[in-house]
Picture 1 (cartoon, helix red, strand yellow):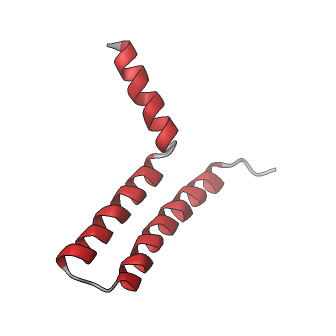
Picture 2 (spheres, one colour):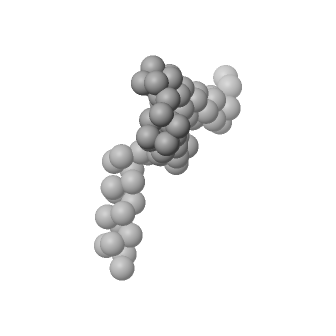
Length: 72
């Protein structure tokens, strides 16, 4: 069981070392699919929402990292 958990953890760390990034990317793909297929939104709108989700995930992660950094 430890090997299975180790493999899952290694896979998770390989694809997204941070849970916020993983959720942000997954949310971006889900929203893009819903907007493109269900709502029939134009491709530029889908692209802006997709990139916006990715950037917001990155900004959230960066903010968290900077908040946790010790100040000199």
